[in-house]
Figure 1: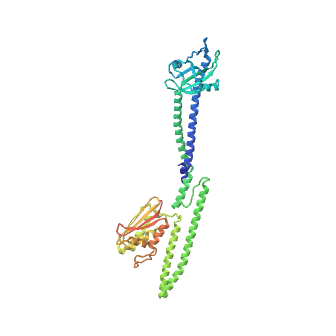
Figure 2 (figure 1 turned 135 degrees about the vertical axis):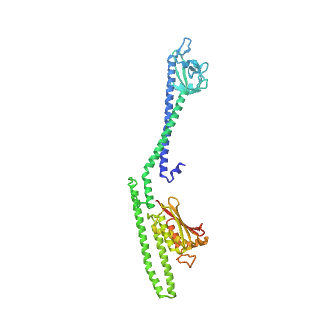
Figure 3 (figure 1 turned 60 degrees about the vertical axis):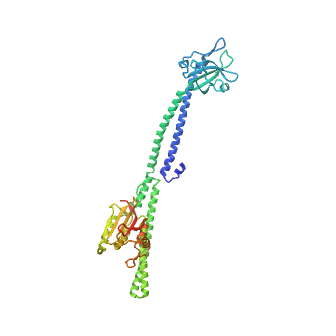
Length: 462
């Protein structure tokens, strides 16, 4: 699962996960080692107390006249109180390898300290060295015990000195230390993770700033990357500026070539049309018809090529409200004999990401068609469709088109009414121009009863 996260597209997430994993691993290992060291230190201190008790027993034990072991008089009151949690006893090994008790503390009452089966063997293997083990007292309380084997004067058989104490306080101290360490390291881990996130965000802030500048160039709010960046990012910013300058140069060169080609063709076509009109006759009519069609196609492809070039990061933006206001006033004067009323609405802060001439053609052609076919009402609405898109709707109350006619009318050169003026390229040009801008043209039934033209176009920031 972790590897899948690292393969993700986010550099911030990758850096945070790697740093967080390392920090958490170090903190967990450190906490475990610290807890183990504390436990070992506490056990060593505890064992030191048991060893002192055994040393006192060993130093003070004597043999009486009858050969019996006599324990020294110890002053520890806990060893005198029954089942107090602190015990001692003096024993001797048996031939079977067991332990036989000779003397015991009053705290044991009539009980004995349990010994592991291999205690005698361990003591014999390491004479004079203490052996520690865990056991329980008669009340089933966990004990930490220590035993050592020694030789007393005037006694042939070795003697085993044993001491034990309730290990509950040590265990509670260890648990308390582990809990405090866990809380401390948890808070430390949270703080370090927060520091990692802040460090990554601050460290990568120049990269985010570069992204914002590139986005501003794409949206037309800037022409190049201007900020000063760290040494690692400065070459990238320079290359981006060089790339944008190169692309702009290529676009301008292509626009020039297209314009030169179009104008080079227009002159011969104009000559052909003039000669055909002056000559007359059947062949002249054919030549005039085909030359006119060729000129329309040249105009069409010239506009299309220019539109495609303009969309390559032109950086221009156009107020939608200003364009609709200009088109509405112009078309109402043109169709004043029909008393056409154009009801338009667009926010003042809505901008088209492109050139004004292109928006005039995108909106003007459908609006002119609506005025041509309406009965008197045309409604135009423009609105934002998110941060980067806008929609333009043109509706009329005319006869409208059925679904099949809507598909045909977008085809280049198709005219549903041959008696109406025009080349049949209007909506085809609008469709191709909208596509060149990464948008779309959609035809539907209008709520006014006629045709509804919907345009999806790129939006520039206000």
